[in-house]
Image (cartoon, rainbow, N blue to C red):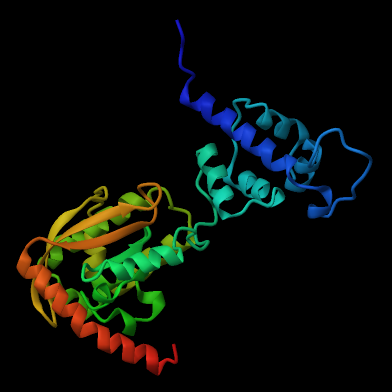
Length: 293
């Protein structure tokens, strides 16, 4: 009778094999070490990786042997640097170790030119890419005029929570503003549980609490809600009332970056979104031309 290995065992062995494969592909010269005498195996030795990462040789050996030991994010960060991991490999390392990356503000590797092109081609459906902190990383023309003029908003303020609690144009576009803001704050609290010590999250929270009494009141409720879709009613300043289905397409872990789309619930809304796209296109072209793009 066969048995299935526990998931933790599988994860540790995958981590061990991944570390070994990355170690064996790096030459001493790549990391500033002398070539030394002829090596029996390619790449760095375990003691060299341990030296570069400032960890014990025995401890690192146990890690490559898939021993049941705990690895801190700080040590994983040191290993990623020592092994010259690219962003995708670094993300894979932390995923295998079941740890959170201590540098969450690194550029999102999934925001590719192809994804940006897809955003534009989704028109007239408003769409954007957000991270779990509600930062708006990219958006298409109709999303840029759906709730406010996003092109006129400074990049550091392009955050859905910040706009929902402080931007008059955004707030006027949401039909059921108190309920939507309460749910957004509850989702933010649920996501923040994994990022409590991270400066970017703490800075956004402090900024919101300092700017909005409404946010302080909602935040004090300690409500939590997981991410999910919902029908929303928006009152666009250009084309009127819209009924849309808020839909998330995850680009990574469920707490990570996502493609957000506002899909029309009826023909009237679709027609109005098409009108919005037609209105926005000349303005966007003129703005780009003025900027010399």
